[in-house]
Image (cartoon, rainbow, N blue to C red; front, side, top):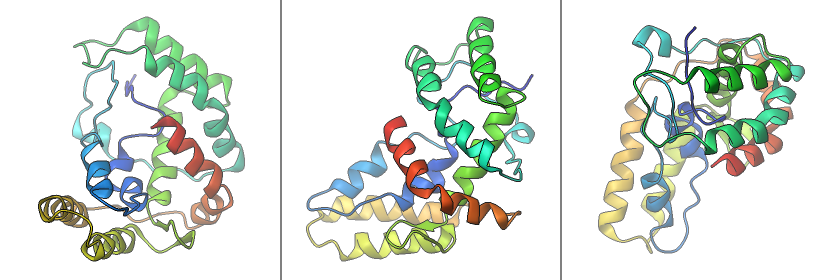
Length: 204
């Protein structure tokens, strides 16, 4: 089994959705938010080995209402398990924790925790392309460009903080983001946009 223990909203958001959620405020709020995110493909609370590169490749799925509703409904239970995980991942996953994640995934209609992860990854990829101001899909690159412009325009941000924030945003812009394979996923995520955003904030 491909074990990928992580917070319910996956680390894929680091390079995608996170940048769409930056709010430029007085001081260094935007930069502070960039500093609090975990590196890509890592979980702040993980309890399993890092997968191979082939395992980490995003496997997009055709989303359904049932899948998204399952993700939303399961968050409190996944969060409760994640809160108990150690900060540092052991070499081998705890079978008891593996069973807990599997049980919650199946309870909410997923065939396995792997399938749950694939659904959340797909949702995250699509969410990352939404402009948070208009709630319209514009693509991840355009979202990040908008945040770059916002940081550049924030005169209240200290120069050093602005420099580091722009470096991180520009690095994100250079990182390859796979295209959304199923365009119907965009419409479905748009339907649940507010609920998914609220769930993301709660999970953080």
